[in-house]
Amino acid sequence: MKGIAYHRGSFTFEGLLYIILGIAGLVLCGMFSEHAQLIYGLVFLGSCVVTAIRSFASVAVPGFLLSLLAALVYLIAGIWLVSATPYSVDGLILFLALLFWIQGVIDLLVSLQRFETSNWGLMFIGGIIVIVLAFIIWIQTGMVSAWTISVLVGINYFVYAVATLLTSMTAIKPQAQHQDAPSSTDSEAGGHH
Image 1: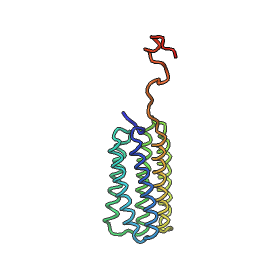
Image 2: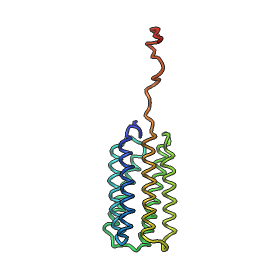
Image 3: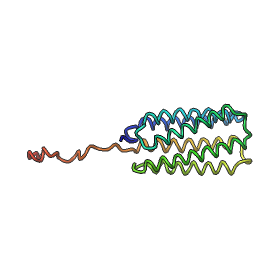
Image 4: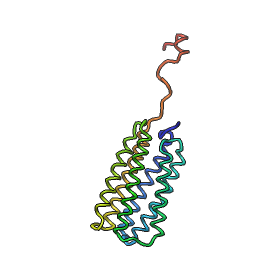
């Protein structure tokens, strides 16, 4: 089964687009905080598309089904936020806290499925950070503005993007068996160089 190293491009694509989505959400929510719910909804719909594309481009990588689950969670969250009656800031904060908690748990589970790889810990640490962010968002209910939450959303996207980019950059392709060792035909033929 081919791993992350063979799908490096799709993971890099996902990481870069998550940086763009995080920056877009951060900047737009800062500029148009009264429309934060709509902006988050659109960002989550974008996340759904990016995650689904990367998932289908790397079906053989462990965590495929969990990645599809993450895309589905982003789809549901995006549709809900775009189409629902506007939440209060507190309602939006609680919604985002729940969404981030789910995302963090999925990230932890994906990392455990990739335990055999040399870089599984990056996603594991990212999942823990996202769960901590969910807790921070949840305890801030009633005390913060949409802008503060935007910063935490941006941090969440940045953490995931960095974990994904580092995972793709550090993935090692399996080497051909003993490339440096002389082949059996060389040694049988007395092929010393």
